[in-house]
Amino acid sequence: MRDEKNVEECLKNKSVWIRLLYMILFTILYSIAEIVIFAVAVYQFLSVLFTGNKDEKILNLGKSLSAYVYQVLQFLTFNSETKPYPMGDWPDAKLLAAHADKPKRAPRKTTTRKPAAKKPTAKRKPAAKKEEPKAEDKPEDKPAEG
Image (cartoon, rainbow, N blue to C red; front, side):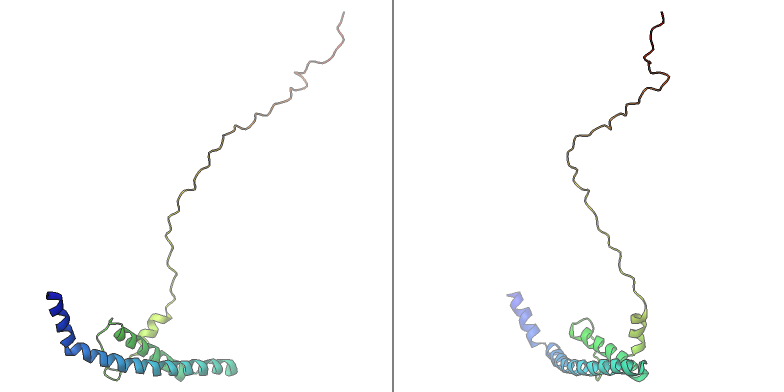
């Protein structure tokens, strides 16, 4: 009974439905941003290919679009309640770029290895090397004196 009332209250909550409308709007804006990012990437590649240099204006546009897409995705996945542009401010690309420019180290793998199962083997002692008696110690075949 209580769960039914809770579900009913959630369904009647206007803020949930308004958020759905914002989510639809931002999904459309995200799709447009994807197309623009693709165009920016192609243009930047061609610029580097033919001139050997990156276009700084397009580079900054790519940074801000990346930051905007990040904000949209944060909102769509309920990780943020802040509405992205046009309901909020255009994101500052420098903040996102500062994190992206730092080199990241790969995390160390902490794997625990199981000791290899020891196979039962008969332990052999190394064979003792027989030493040849030295020439002084060897009995020589001498004729008996007599």
